[in-house]
Image 1 (cartoon, rainbow, N blue to C red):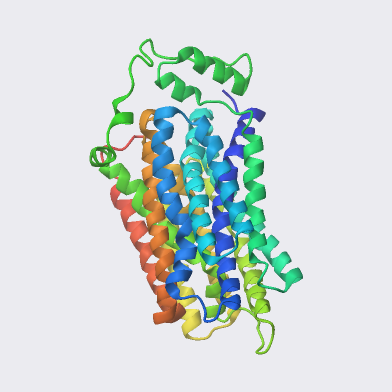
Image 2 (cartoon, rainbow, N blue to C red):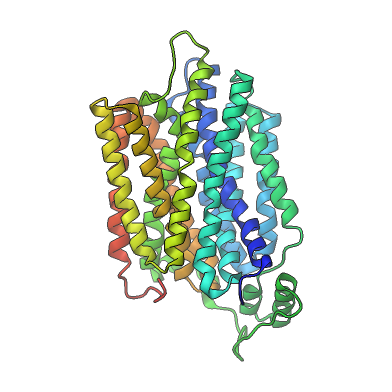
Length: 447
Protein backbone atom coordinates (compact mmCIF):
# COMPACT_ATOMS: atom_id res chain seq x y z
CA UNK A 1 0.00 0.00 0.00
CA UNK A 2 0.88 3.65 -0.28
CA UNK A 3 0.88 5.85 2.81
CA UNK A 4 -2.68 6.94 3.56
CA UNK A 5 -4.20 9.32 6.15
CA UNK A 6 -5.05 6.23 8.20
CA UNK A 7 -1.38 5.23 8.30
CA UNK A 8 -0.45 8.66 9.63
CA UNK A 9 -3.20 8.41 12.24
CA UNK A 10 -1.81 5.08 13.46
CA UNK A 11 1.67 6.60 13.76
CA UNK A 12 0.30 9.58 15.69
CA UNK A 13 -1.61 7.41 18.17
CA UNK A 14 1.40 5.15 18.72
CA UNK A 15 3.84 8.05 19.07
CA UNK A 16 1.99 9.34 22.15
CA UNK A 17 3.49 6.44 24.08
CA UNK A 18 6.96 7.73 23.25
CA UNK A 19 5.99 11.28 24.15
CA UNK A 20 4.68 10.34 27.58
CA UNK A 21 7.82 8.31 28.28
CA UNK A 22 10.17 11.28 28.04
CA UNK A 23 7.56 13.56 29.63
CA UNK A 24 7.73 11.53 32.83
CA UNK A 25 11.54 11.46 32.83
CA UNK A 26 11.73 15.23 32.33
CA UNK A 27 9.08 15.78 34.99
CA UNK A 28 10.97 13.66 37.53
CA UNK A 29 14.11 15.74 36.94
CA UNK A 30 12.16 18.91 37.73
CA UNK A 31 10.31 17.52 40.76
CA UNK A 32 13.51 16.28 42.48
CA UNK A 33 15.06 19.75 43.04
CA UNK A 34 11.61 21.03 44.11
CA UNK A 35 11.52 18.31 46.77
CA UNK A 36 15.03 19.34 47.83
CA UNK A 37 13.66 22.81 48.61
CA UNK A 38 10.77 21.47 50.72
CA UNK A 39 12.57 18.69 52.58
CA UNK A 40 15.34 19.47 55.04
CA UNK A 41 17.90 18.06 55.04
CA UNK A 42 18.06 17.56 51.28
CA UNK A 43 17.12 14.27 49.69
CA UNK A 44 19.98 11.81 49.85
CA UNK A 45 21.75 10.76 46.66
CA UNK A 46 20.08 7.37 46.96
CA UNK A 47 16.58 8.84 47.23
CA UNK A 48 17.20 11.19 44.31
CA UNK A 49 18.33 8.21 42.26
CA UNK A 50 15.37 6.11 43.38
CA UNK A 51 12.81 8.77 42.44
CA UNK A 52 14.53 9.38 39.11
CA UNK A 53 14.77 5.67 38.36
CA UNK A 54 11.34 4.56 39.62
CA UNK A 55 9.59 4.87 36.27
CA UNK A 56 12.59 3.31 34.51
CA UNK A 57 12.46 0.28 36.80
CA UNK A 58 8.78 0.03 35.95
CA UNK A 59 9.63 0.19 32.25
CA UNK A 60 12.00 -2.77 32.66
CA UNK A 61 9.20 -4.91 34.06
CA UNK A 62 6.47 -3.53 31.83
CA UNK A 63 8.37 -3.92 28.56
CA UNK A 64 9.16 -7.58 29.22
CA UNK A 65 5.81 -8.55 30.77
CA UNK A 66 3.54 -6.75 28.33
CA UNK A 67 5.77 -7.56 25.35
CA UNK A 68 5.56 -11.29 26.04
CA UNK A 69 1.84 -11.22 26.91
CA UNK A 70 1.03 -9.28 23.74
CA UNK A 71 2.78 -11.91 21.60
CA UNK A 72 0.52 -14.55 23.15
CA UNK A 73 -2.81 -12.77 23.71
CA UNK A 74 -2.75 -9.96 21.15
CA UNK A 75 -1.78 -6.31 21.11
CA UNK A 76 -5.10 -4.50 21.42
CA UNK A 77 -6.01 -5.11 25.08
CA UNK A 78 -2.57 -4.11 26.34
CA UNK A 79 -2.47 -1.14 23.95
CA UNK A 80 -5.47 0.21 25.89
CA UNK A 81 -4.52 -1.10 29.33
CA UNK A 82 -1.11 0.61 29.45
CA UNK A 83 -2.38 4.23 29.23
CA UNK A 84 -5.15 3.35 31.70
CA UNK A 85 -2.50 2.20 34.18
CA UNK A 86 -0.57 5.45 33.62
CA UNK A 87 -3.72 7.52 34.19
CA UNK A 88 -4.67 5.81 37.46
CA UNK A 89 -1.13 5.97 38.85
CA UNK A 90 -0.65 9.65 38.00
CA UNK A 91 -3.96 10.65 39.63
CA UNK A 92 -2.99 8.66 42.75
CA UNK A 93 0.25 10.66 42.90
CA UNK A 94 -1.73 13.90 42.74
CA UNK A 95 -4.27 12.91 45.41
CA UNK A 96 -1.78 11.42 47.88
CA UNK A 97 1.39 13.52 47.61
CA UNK A 98 4.47 12.19 49.40
CA UNK A 99 7.91 10.95 48.44
CA UNK A 100 6.87 7.32 49.01
CA UNK A 101 3.65 7.63 47.01
CA UNK A 102 5.44 9.48 44.22
CA UNK A 103 8.03 6.71 43.94
CA UNK A 104 5.38 3.95 43.80
CA UNK A 105 3.25 5.86 41.29
CA UNK A 106 6.25 6.55 39.05
CA UNK A 107 7.00 2.80 39.08
CA UNK A 108 3.44 1.98 37.97
CA UNK A 109 3.54 4.72 35.33
CA UNK A 110 6.80 3.21 34.12
CA UNK A 111 5.18 -0.22 33.76
CA UNK A 112 2.60 1.30 31.44
CA UNK A 113 5.31 3.12 29.48
CA UNK A 114 7.27 -0.14 29.19
CA UNK A 115 4.29 -1.75 27.51
CA UNK A 116 4.04 1.25 25.22
CA UNK A 117 7.67 0.89 24.15
CA UNK A 118 7.01 -2.68 23.05
CA UNK A 119 3.54 -2.24 21.54
CA UNK A 120 4.03 1.07 19.72
CA UNK A 121 6.81 -0.22 17.49
CA UNK A 122 4.98 -3.54 16.99
CA UNK A 123 1.84 -1.86 15.65
CA UNK A 124 3.75 0.51 13.40
CA UNK A 125 6.19 -2.03 11.98
CA UNK A 126 3.32 -4.40 11.16
CA UNK A 127 0.89 -1.86 9.69
CA UNK A 128 3.12 0.45 7.65
CA UNK A 129 3.96 -0.11 3.97
CA UNK A 130 7.30 -1.91 3.75
CA UNK A 131 9.06 1.04 2.10
CA UNK A 132 8.18 3.38 4.99
CA UNK A 133 8.35 0.95 7.90
CA UNK A 134 11.66 2.00 9.50
CA UNK A 135 10.96 5.65 8.77
CA UNK A 136 7.56 5.59 10.47
CA UNK A 137 8.92 3.73 13.49
CA UNK A 138 11.47 6.54 13.70
CA UNK A 139 8.77 9.19 13.33
CA UNK A 140 6.96 7.69 16.33
CA UNK A 141 10.19 7.77 18.31
CA UNK A 142 10.49 11.48 17.48
CA UNK A 143 7.50 11.92 19.77
CA UNK A 144 10.11 11.80 22.53
CA UNK A 145 11.34 15.23 21.45
CA UNK A 146 7.88 16.73 21.84
CA UNK A 147 7.64 15.19 25.31
CA UNK A 148 10.90 16.83 26.40
CA UNK A 149 10.11 20.23 24.91
CA UNK A 150 6.45 20.48 25.95
CA UNK A 151 7.02 19.38 29.54
CA UNK A 152 10.03 21.68 29.98
CA UNK A 153 8.05 24.59 28.52
CA UNK A 154 4.91 23.91 30.58
CA UNK A 155 6.89 23.45 33.79
CA UNK A 156 8.89 26.63 33.16
CA UNK A 157 5.65 28.57 32.71
CA UNK A 158 4.02 27.05 35.79
CA UNK A 159 7.05 27.55 38.04
CA UNK A 160 7.40 31.15 36.88
CA UNK A 161 3.76 31.71 37.86
CA UNK A 162 3.64 29.62 41.06
CA UNK A 163 7.00 30.63 42.61
CA UNK A 164 6.39 27.80 45.08
CA UNK A 165 7.84 24.29 45.36
CA UNK A 166 4.90 22.93 47.39
CA UNK A 167 2.75 22.63 44.26
CA UNK A 168 4.93 19.91 42.71
CA UNK A 169 2.12 17.23 42.76
CA UNK A 170 0.07 19.31 40.31
CA UNK A 171 2.76 18.78 37.67
CA UNK A 172 1.54 15.17 37.40
CA UNK A 173 -1.63 16.48 35.71
CA UNK A 174 0.52 16.74 32.56
CA UNK A 175 0.92 12.96 32.59
CA UNK A 176 -2.71 12.28 33.54
CA UNK A 177 -4.15 14.42 30.73
CA UNK A 178 -1.84 12.84 28.14
CA UNK A 179 -2.80 9.32 29.29
CA UNK A 180 -6.52 10.19 29.10
CA UNK A 181 -6.05 11.42 25.52
CA UNK A 182 -4.30 8.16 24.63
CA UNK A 183 -7.22 6.10 25.95
CA UNK A 184 -9.76 8.10 23.98
CA UNK A 185 -7.79 7.77 20.73
CA UNK A 186 -7.49 3.99 21.16
CA UNK A 187 -11.18 3.24 21.61
CA UNK A 188 -11.56 2.84 17.84
CA UNK A 189 -8.42 0.77 17.36
CA UNK A 190 -8.15 -2.86 16.31
CA UNK A 191 -6.09 -6.00 16.67
CA UNK A 192 -2.94 -6.35 14.57
CA UNK A 193 -3.84 -8.18 11.31
CA UNK A 194 -0.37 -9.77 11.16
CA UNK A 195 -0.70 -11.09 14.70
CA UNK A 196 -4.10 -12.58 13.80
CA UNK A 197 -2.61 -14.15 10.68
CA UNK A 198 0.18 -15.68 12.71
CA UNK A 199 -2.45 -17.28 14.97
CA UNK A 200 -4.34 -18.73 12.02
CA UNK A 201 -7.28 -16.33 12.33
CA UNK A 202 -7.30 -15.34 8.67
CA UNK A 203 -10.90 -14.11 8.57
CA UNK A 204 -10.37 -11.95 11.65
CA UNK A 205 -7.17 -10.60 10.11
CA UNK A 206 -8.98 -9.59 6.92
CA UNK A 207 -11.71 -7.88 8.95
CA UNK A 208 -9.14 -6.00 11.05
CA UNK A 209 -7.32 -4.87 7.91
CA UNK A 210 -10.56 -3.50 6.46
CA UNK A 211 -11.32 -1.67 9.71
CA UNK A 212 -7.87 -0.11 9.66
CA UNK A 213 -7.63 0.79 5.97
CA UNK A 214 -11.09 0.62 4.46
CA UNK A 215 -13.24 -1.95 2.59
CA UNK A 216 -10.78 -2.31 -0.29
CA UNK A 217 -7.96 -3.58 1.93
CA UNK A 218 -7.00 -7.21 1.42
CA UNK A 219 -4.42 -9.65 2.76
CA UNK A 220 -2.19 -12.00 0.81
CA UNK A 221 -0.88 -15.02 2.69
CA UNK A 222 0.80 -18.36 2.19
CA UNK A 223 -1.44 -21.39 1.98
CA UNK A 224 -0.12 -22.68 5.31
CA UNK A 225 -0.31 -19.33 7.09
CA UNK A 226 -1.38 -19.73 10.66
CA UNK A 227 -1.56 -23.54 10.40
CA UNK A 228 0.31 -23.74 13.66
CA UNK A 229 1.56 -21.42 16.36
CA UNK A 230 5.11 -20.31 15.95
CA UNK A 231 7.32 -22.01 18.53
CA UNK A 232 9.17 -18.82 19.46
CA UNK A 233 6.10 -17.38 21.19
CA UNK A 234 6.16 -20.23 23.72
CA UNK A 235 9.85 -20.63 24.52
CA UNK A 236 11.17 -19.38 27.83
CA UNK A 237 13.02 -16.11 28.04
CA UNK A 238 16.43 -17.68 28.91
CA UNK A 239 16.15 -19.98 25.89
CA UNK A 240 15.04 -17.10 23.68
CA UNK A 241 18.06 -15.06 24.75
CA UNK A 242 20.45 -17.99 24.19
CA UNK A 243 19.11 -18.66 20.71
CA UNK A 244 19.17 -14.97 19.72
CA UNK A 245 22.05 -13.70 21.86
CA UNK A 246 23.73 -11.70 19.09
CA UNK A 247 20.49 -9.90 18.32
CA UNK A 248 19.91 -9.35 22.03
CA UNK A 249 23.37 -7.79 22.46
CA UNK A 250 23.08 -5.60 19.34
CA UNK A 251 19.59 -4.34 20.20
CA UNK A 252 20.04 -4.17 23.99
CA UNK A 253 23.53 -3.06 25.05
CA UNK A 254 23.69 0.10 22.86
CA UNK A 255 20.18 0.91 24.09
CA UNK A 256 21.53 0.65 27.65
CA UNK A 257 24.41 3.00 26.76
CA UNK A 258 22.00 5.42 25.12
CA UNK A 259 19.92 5.31 28.30
CA UNK A 260 22.79 6.91 30.20
CA UNK A 261 22.46 9.97 27.98
CA UNK A 262 18.70 10.12 27.51
CA UNK A 263 17.70 9.31 31.09
CA UNK A 264 20.83 9.54 33.23
CA UNK A 265 21.77 12.99 31.96
CA UNK A 266 18.21 13.80 30.85
CA UNK A 267 16.54 13.27 34.23
CA UNK A 268 19.19 15.26 36.09
CA UNK A 269 19.68 17.90 33.40
CA UNK A 270 18.31 20.75 35.58
CA UNK A 271 20.58 19.62 38.44
CA UNK A 272 23.58 19.29 36.10
CA UNK A 273 22.90 22.79 34.77
CA UNK A 274 23.08 24.05 38.35
CA UNK A 275 26.21 21.98 39.10
CA UNK A 276 27.96 23.42 36.04
CA UNK A 277 26.97 26.95 37.06
CA UNK A 278 25.12 27.68 33.81
CA UNK A 279 22.04 29.26 35.36
CA UNK A 280 21.69 32.75 36.82
CA UNK A 281 21.09 32.84 40.56
CA UNK A 282 21.85 35.41 43.21
CA UNK A 283 22.30 34.47 46.90
CA UNK A 284 19.27 35.34 48.99
CA UNK A 285 16.75 34.84 46.19
CA UNK A 286 13.85 32.42 46.51
CA UNK A 287 15.35 28.93 45.86
CA UNK A 288 12.53 28.09 43.44
CA UNK A 289 13.97 30.78 41.12
CA UNK A 290 17.16 28.70 41.02
CA UNK A 291 15.16 25.72 39.78
CA UNK A 292 13.11 27.85 37.39
CA UNK A 293 16.19 29.26 35.68
CA UNK A 294 17.75 25.80 35.36
CA UNK A 295 14.49 24.61 33.73
CA UNK A 296 14.73 27.56 31.32
CA UNK A 297 18.19 26.43 30.19
CA UNK A 298 16.95 22.83 30.09
CA UNK A 299 14.24 24.04 27.68
CA UNK A 300 16.88 25.62 25.40
CA UNK A 301 18.88 22.40 25.35
CA UNK A 302 15.73 20.29 24.82
CA UNK A 303 14.73 22.31 21.76
CA UNK A 304 17.65 20.77 19.81
CA UNK A 305 16.22 17.26 20.33
CA UNK A 306 13.56 17.61 17.62
CA UNK A 307 16.02 18.78 14.89
CA UNK A 308 18.19 15.81 15.84
CA UNK A 309 15.32 13.40 15.26
CA UNK A 310 14.41 15.09 11.98
CA UNK A 311 17.97 14.78 10.66
CA UNK A 312 18.05 11.12 11.72
CA UNK A 313 14.73 10.46 9.99
CA UNK A 314 16.03 12.14 6.85
CA UNK A 315 19.07 9.85 6.86
CA UNK A 316 16.84 6.79 7.32
CA UNK A 317 14.58 7.91 4.48
CA UNK A 318 17.67 8.33 2.27
CA UNK A 319 18.48 4.67 2.98
CA UNK A 320 21.60 5.35 5.01
CA UNK A 321 22.81 2.34 6.98
CA UNK A 322 21.16 2.59 10.39
CA UNK A 323 24.06 0.84 12.12
CA UNK A 324 26.47 3.47 10.81
CA UNK A 325 24.13 6.27 11.91
CA UNK A 326 24.04 4.83 15.43
CA UNK A 327 27.80 4.25 15.62
CA UNK A 328 28.74 7.74 14.45
CA UNK A 329 26.11 9.28 16.73
CA UNK A 330 27.69 7.61 19.75
CA UNK A 331 31.17 8.87 18.79
CA UNK A 332 29.95 12.43 18.31
CA UNK A 333 28.18 12.32 21.68
CA UNK A 334 31.44 11.29 23.34
CA UNK A 335 33.26 14.15 21.58
CA UNK A 336 30.63 16.73 22.65
CA UNK A 337 30.87 15.60 26.27
CA UNK A 338 34.65 15.85 26.06
CA UNK A 339 34.42 19.48 24.90
CA UNK A 340 31.89 20.21 27.66
CA UNK A 341 34.31 18.72 30.20
CA UNK A 342 37.15 20.93 28.96
CA UNK A 343 34.88 23.99 29.02
CA UNK A 344 33.94 23.30 32.63
CA UNK A 345 37.52 22.53 33.70
CA UNK A 346 39.01 25.67 32.14
CA UNK A 347 36.00 27.91 32.96
CA UNK A 348 35.31 28.84 29.34
CA UNK A 349 32.35 31.03 28.43
CA UNK A 350 29.09 29.40 29.53
CA UNK A 351 27.73 29.52 25.98
CA UNK A 352 30.48 27.10 24.91
CA UNK A 353 29.20 24.72 27.58
CA UNK A 354 25.58 25.22 26.56
CA UNK A 355 26.55 24.74 22.90
CA UNK A 356 28.39 21.52 23.78
CA UNK A 357 25.35 20.30 25.69
CA UNK A 358 23.18 21.06 22.66
CA UNK A 359 25.63 19.26 20.34
CA UNK A 360 25.45 16.23 22.63
CA UNK A 361 21.65 16.21 22.48
CA UNK A 362 21.70 16.76 18.70
CA UNK A 363 23.91 13.76 17.92
CA UNK A 364 22.29 11.62 20.62
CA UNK A 365 18.96 11.98 18.84
CA UNK A 366 20.30 11.76 15.29
CA UNK A 367 21.85 8.43 16.17
CA UNK A 368 21.50 6.34 19.35
CA UNK A 369 18.18 7.61 20.72
CA UNK A 370 16.44 7.13 17.38
CA UNK A 371 18.16 4.06 16.00
CA UNK A 372 18.09 1.95 19.18
CA UNK A 373 14.29 2.14 18.84
CA UNK A 374 14.21 1.52 15.09
CA UNK A 375 16.65 -1.40 15.08
CA UNK A 376 14.96 -4.09 17.26
CA UNK A 377 11.72 -4.43 15.23
CA UNK A 378 13.78 -4.90 12.06
CA UNK A 379 15.80 -7.88 13.31
CA UNK A 380 13.04 -10.01 14.87
CA UNK A 381 10.26 -11.87 12.97
CA UNK A 382 6.61 -11.06 13.70
CA UNK A 383 6.00 -14.15 15.87
CA UNK A 384 8.66 -13.13 18.42
CA UNK A 385 8.85 -9.40 17.79
CA UNK A 386 7.05 -8.33 20.95
CA UNK A 387 9.32 -10.47 23.11
CA UNK A 388 12.48 -9.41 21.27
CA UNK A 389 11.65 -5.71 21.38
CA UNK A 390 10.54 -6.04 25.00
CA UNK A 391 13.87 -7.61 26.01
CA UNK A 392 15.79 -4.90 24.14
CA UNK A 393 13.76 -2.17 25.86
CA UNK A 394 14.28 -3.88 29.21
CA UNK A 395 18.07 -4.02 28.79
CA UNK A 396 18.01 -0.41 27.66
CA UNK A 397 16.18 0.64 30.77
CA UNK A 398 18.55 -1.33 32.99
CA UNK A 399 21.28 0.93 31.61
CA UNK A 400 19.06 3.96 32.15
CA UNK A 401 18.36 2.94 35.75
CA UNK A 402 22.07 2.46 36.38
CA UNK A 403 22.74 5.91 34.91
CA UNK A 404 20.04 7.58 36.99
CA UNK A 405 21.29 5.95 40.18
CA UNK A 406 24.97 6.63 39.54
CA UNK A 407 24.77 10.30 38.50
CA UNK A 408 23.74 11.66 41.95
CA UNK A 409 26.51 9.55 43.50
CA UNK A 410 29.07 10.81 40.97
CA UNK A 411 27.91 14.39 41.52
CA UNK A 412 28.38 14.04 45.26
CA UNK A 413 31.72 12.23 45.13
CA UNK A 414 33.47 13.72 42.10
CA UNK A 415 31.31 16.60 40.87
CA UNK A 416 30.09 17.45 37.39
CA UNK A 417 33.50 16.63 35.80
CA UNK A 418 33.23 12.98 36.88
CA UNK A 419 29.69 12.74 35.48
CA UNK A 420 30.82 14.05 32.10
CA UNK A 421 33.89 11.77 31.92
CA UNK A 422 31.95 8.61 32.79
CA UNK A 423 29.16 9.50 30.36
CA UNK A 424 31.66 10.01 27.53
CA UNK A 425 33.15 6.55 28.18
CA UNK A 426 29.68 4.97 28.10
CA UNK A 427 28.98 6.61 24.73
CA UNK A 428 32.23 5.18 23.35
CA UNK A 429 31.24 1.70 24.57
CA UNK A 430 27.92 2.04 22.73
CA UNK A 431 29.77 2.82 19.50
CA UNK A 432 32.12 -0.15 19.85
CA UNK A 433 29.35 -2.66 20.61
CA UNK A 434 27.15 -1.41 17.75
CA UNK A 435 29.95 -1.70 15.22
CA UNK A 436 31.19 -5.04 16.50
CA UNK A 437 27.90 -6.94 16.73
CA UNK A 438 26.31 -5.49 13.60
CA UNK A 439 28.46 -7.91 11.59
CA UNK A 440 26.91 -10.95 13.24
CA UNK A 441 26.02 -13.50 10.59
CA UNK A 442 22.62 -14.50 12.04
CA UNK A 443 21.02 -11.07 11.77
CA UNK A 444 18.32 -10.35 9.21
CA UNK A 445 19.82 -9.05 5.98
CA UNK A 446 17.68 -5.93 6.10
CA UNK A 447 19.65 -4.46 9.02
